[in-house]
Image (cartoon, rainbow, N blue to C red; front, side, top):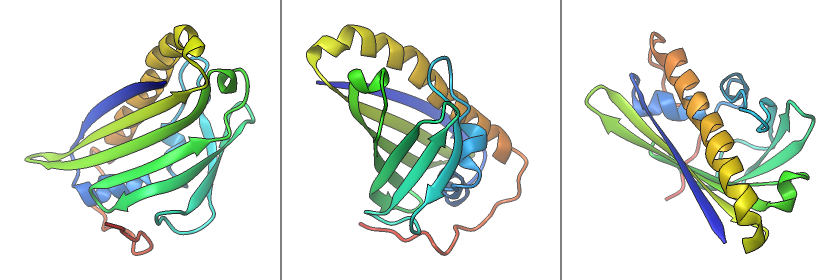
Length: 168
């Protein structure tokens, strides 16, 4: 059984710039500050340049460590990954998260849609997992996107870093 979440945000910057920021391991932790029981991301260590199959380790504010494996990368339009390594009590409810980011050009910049599909451990997890993730994870996602948009509001446009490879 899966639970779906979505957060959307308009950015006043071009898709290349927004996409690069979303994959910036050094800067992303400043934007994902957590919400309620969802911890902030404190550090991201990329094990290789962004490419399909490459992995990153996330160290959270509560000391937990998560792992991302990139499953799709089409700069500057699409980025997807699977998140694993959840620890109890969340691991009792959720096996993995499957994130999907879409970057759509608009007349004034970029529209970002960040979706998560959470694979629950059992249908019995639904009564606890659904409200927890819908309120707190979706809130953390929305806060993250808003912080990213604010950071780019007056920033000069930057080119897509050359180390980001695309896969179609």
